[in-house]
Length: 233
Image: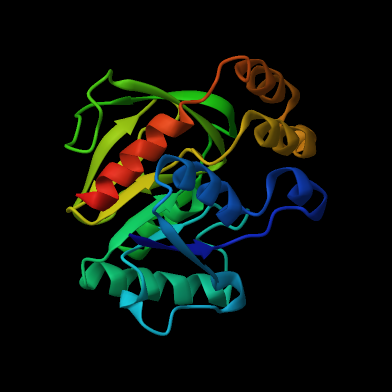
């Protein structure tokens, strides 16, 4: 299987030696679970796209510090690309910004949440378990870093999992689109770096609880297996 990663942001230069860029994080997680997986990366912030949509079997849209409602030309271009992928029922996985962009591109709406920042480890719970789920329990722990939230879902989307903080945390459209608000590609050290960097912005109490939550390990490989199950189905 060939997976095209649509890169929507750059990691801060001082963090790259320790954690890599966002595509590197996904390649480390998914490539560890399936060594036969092949990857292509396009930096859509810089206007890079495949010459042929069918160059790969599926696409993954990374997280970003940008908001999907920002007035940035590359975001509009990416939304048009997502609409074409959806029209052709090409497999898409969206993560955080990718989750939100898919919703906004396909008739939904994203806003800055009045609940503030979600950081550290959050537990999301499935209301229904799809075929790609491992059926080993409805709750899962995932690292998050977001203030924006999907407040209106894409047309035809089914909400599969959420929490009191984020109701629309895992969504699926048909058999070809799956999106997560959380970051399975993050490791706790990177989550801590982001919280330290945004400490004043997110507020001391949210920062403190976010750092404390890192005592528990995220279920990154479990989520990675779900993604692979979905892509293979």
